[in-house]
Length: 339
Ligand code: FO1
Image 1 (cartoon, rainbow, N blue to C red):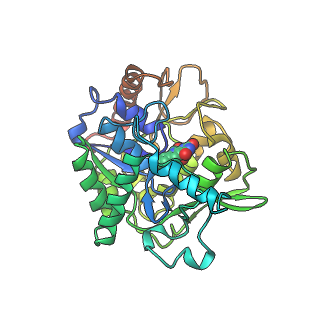
Image 2 (image 1 turned 45 degrees about the vertical axis):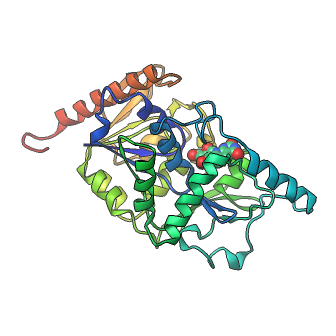
Image 3 (image 1 turned 90 degrees about the vertical axis):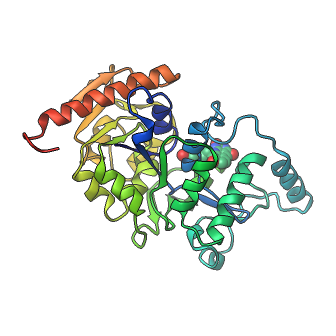
């Protein structure tokens, strides 16, 4: 068994080329759900869907989200109708009293379809409609995700981190923004003072996610430590499970340079240095790290170095092999007789 913690593009890119190193049939992928939204009544799970679409062979590899060559008929018509109705001022949050008055899984992340601020392709929207209807039929997000995984012929077991709502809320000097409003609508520009995982205290980690982490070993790909992995760590039981299993983490930084995305700004906002050293502090449960060849950070745990930039599947295979070597280094540290 190997368990991957996935969010954003880092871990999905690693997964895309790791089949020759880690057997997909023995792999579980735990997807972040902190950046999920309910948009126009449909539950959208971006991080789960990137894995779903990548492993299902339909991912748009230009963006690493959404379905390749998807049409935009509904999205474009929604924007046209919104404009004609004078409703083109999105993102339009549902009113405060509606944020917790509908589908429980969508608490604190509800947006109107008026002035739809995220691009949702037509096929992508069908996935969200099916997911939402199955949730409304009473299935858990874990069950629904596995049903979608069957529909896309996935070779890995894909499960969400929780069946309960956890909303990543970015605090700025001008107020709160849901992560998607911060990232998609505001382009990640606002100053960030804090990041909150709303609902995490009351949420339960999905049993399938905790079991997979306990079974281990675990690979944390080069995902954003704050908004991709942070929501998982905020759930009771996940950090404890990680502490008890062999964990290798790939740094999304080369010293203090991040490959892509808002990780640096978000790390600083929650009190970590925006660097590999900061990642090692945030991941105190990690037993070994994979760092870039150009990253000279001195860590207190075993390190395997390689070129960690992943443009092609061959790059991902190289990083996956480095993860395998890092896991071997962890096994060498284990006392005799301990698995
Ligand atoms: N990212 C964008 O930058 N713009 C979009 O319009 C957008 C739409 C979108 C729709 C579905 C989906 O699953 C992901 C989407 N993303 C979009 C990506 C998403 O904002 C983030 O990259 C992830 O949440 C970060 O992990």
